[in-house]
Length: 401
Image (tube, rainbow, N blue to C red; front, side):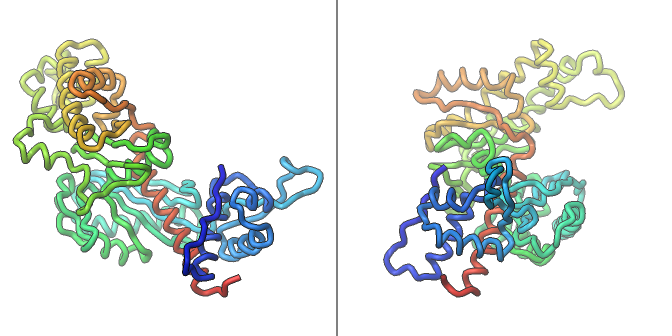
């Protein structure tokens, strides 16, 4: 790693330069590996005396801790620096139709506590109240000072209006439609809140800690209760002008191609005429119900009817990916969601279909983060914003060096 200090532009004030340098020094410390003063100066290009001043600033605001690293320098007891585990925290929330998942994250998005709660049947205000209760529980379980929680990021299944903070097209949670979720969460949690589309956060999670980390441009395609895509182009999350980038259902529905929908409800509807056959020996059992999990299990067992349904799922997924590839020409598509995670059955089928219909098909992978992708992205964004907030507050109040 070699993080050089940014070259100051003309007109940059001493305070701005100081903030930039603090951020640069922090960027080589936040990974968690103890690092010496000399190493920081070498990696950043900042002089050793200035690095010393910046380290004092980071120690004073509680982002950094120091200790001798006898394993690396047993004879001299040199001082090394690392992120202070309990210095600053952020809340990460994933609001789903059935579950509210939460994480309390420290520097570098290190997980301090995690818990899920059932929110089935709750209206929007009660879901916000549940989020506040969950936050208090996470803080108590982690045993941290509530004052160190400086930011929160929440993922929701809908389009977030970046101007009004309201949610639209929340098909999986109709109670959120038109709800001023940003303002309500900020009032309930007592910290600044960013609300993002959940699939966008999943893409961000893959970009920071998952399969997409090595790709310049990729799409995260979630196929489960609904279908949505998150786009990372040239290393940056692409939300679009209205925050609706990746809402592929809008394009398909507008063109009358709804029969291409690979979501769970659509696939079960497609398989319904063969439900008795697909349920197998358990068809007559009380309460026997065809589910996507059962379909994929039967396909793995070699059931030809189930395999035919999986073929149809692959065809529909390839139709969605073809649209993404034609517009964005991404190098990688990562499959996620309850259906998309069945990579052992889907990857080779979808890849073969894309080879037939596209001159430059993207590479396919399955999410390495599973159902934790949204929280991973929210934690990464929240931890980064929490640190930024602390640094900005420090540079506003302290004198320039």
